[in-house]
Amino acid sequence: MIRIHDLTKSFDDVCAVNHVSLEIEDGIMFGLLGTNGAGKTTLLRMLCGIIEADFGEIRLDGEGDFLSPSCKEKVFYLPDDPYYFPNASIQVMADFFAKQYPDMDAESVSYMAESLNLDMLQPIRTFSKGMKRQAFLILALCSRTKYLFCDEVFDGLDPIATEIMKNLFRQEMKARDFTIIVASHKLGDLEDICGNIAILHKGGVVTAGDFRKQAGNARKFQCVFPLEAKLDALKECPQIVRFHEDARFVTLITRGDTGEIQTLIEEQNPIFVGEVPLNLEEMFITEMEGAGYDIRKVLS
View 1 (cartoon, rainbow, N blue to C red):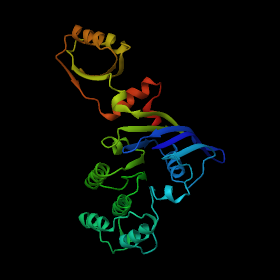
View 2: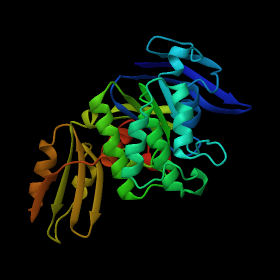
View 3: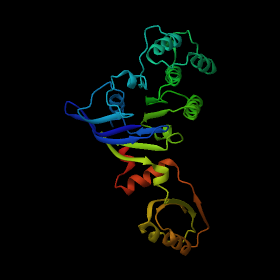
View 4: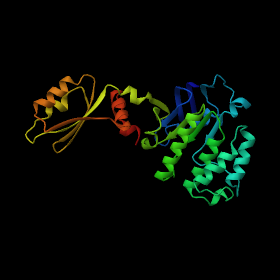
């Protein structure tokens, strides 16, 4: 388990991470969501001991010394632009990481690379951005560390490669004790793989948790009304978190007891009423606006 308490880091006059506290359970994929400059990269670098916090505490399985061999062997950090030796191939980097991580699985590196049509002996510098990302994701997974920290994990990957890597993540998490923290500025990158997500804004945590559970009392209705319908009462109903109208097609996201809302809908003799599931973006919007934030400003 990772415990972060009151973590703070400043660079000159800029507070990059501002009193962040989080608990990340073992065996999950945890998302850090926020715009560039929100503090995601600085937080990840502090988690793996690259930079030191000004204030606060991080404990990795109860340990606070990130320079100890026991901590270093547990963590693989994959930055947005990973370093590799000049003219190094995947094979060279696999041999290098095998010296850092005793459980490195060289056979799996070769197997995964072949499955993705990556040449183990070709210089990585000749790869496209997406191919480099795939190569280092393979190396990260096959290091078989307990923790993997990824910065902009799917940046540069096409949709097919993204789905392949997500499936590899899922398989590894099923097969062993494996915790992944992924940072991204794109909600879509995290939507189908992270249940627990923290939103960072200006260095601080706006909100965090399992939003699918937190939004359990939120509901989404789609309605079609006749042209003569008067919708002012619906728009003003306090239980409605969001109201979107396109001609006579109306989408409502509600919180709490929907009895009054359903009565107001029926009073306008709707042509159609249906309840549909909320997607993760709508869950975020509901949770954030309920806390007094406009998520469009936080994530734009």
